[in-house]
Amino acid sequence: MNKQELEKIKQKALEEHIPIIMDDTLEVIGTYLSNNKPSRILEIGTAVGYSAICFTEFLAENGVIDTIERDEERVKEAKVNIQLAEVEDRIHIYEGDAVEILPTLDNQYDVVFIDAAKGKYPFFLKQALRMISKEGIIFADNILYKGYVMSDYNKHKQRTAVRNLREYIKEVSENPNLETEILEVGDGLAISKIKILI
Image (cartoon, rainbow, N blue to C red; front, side, top):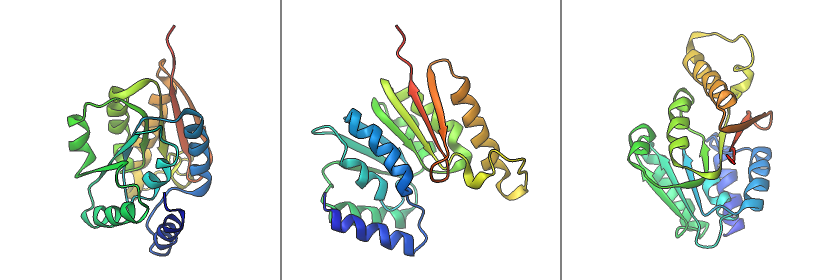
C-alpha cells in the first residue's frame, strides 16, 4: 500500500467534507484486524475508498475486500484512489444500492463493516448475519449519531435514522448469538462478535 497516497486521499476527503472513518475508530478496528488477519471483508458504504484502503493493510495473504457504493461520483473517485494506493487487486467495488446488492451476495465474510445509510442499519445487520463466518465480527460505525441515539432526540429530520440505529443496538444487544459492545469512539462504534457455540 502506498502510504503517501493514502494520506493525500484522507486530506482531500477532509477538505471536501466527505465522511471518512475517524482516526480513533480506525485504530480500534485496526487493532482487532491485525490480531485476526481476515481473509474476506465486506464493507457497506465505500465513499471514496479510504477505509477499504486502510483495511487492506490487515488482510491475510490473498485476502480481499468487497465494498458497496451507490453514489456514482464516489465510485469513480474510489476507483482512482484505490489505484493510487496500489491495492486494486485487493478491493472489489459493487456499484449500486446495498439494499439491492446484499441479497444477491452469497459469500462468507470474516468481517462486515457497516457505514452507509443510517436508516437501513437493521436491514444491513440481517444481511451481515446471513453471511458472517463462525468467528466473525460486525462493526457498525456512527452508531451513536452525534449523541442523538442515546438522548431523547426526536426531531423530524433525523427521526427515522435515530429510530433505526436504536433498533440496531437493541437487536445486537439482545441477540443470544452475539457479544456486543458499544464504544464512544468517533461517532460511536458497535462491535458484535459471533459467539462460539460449544
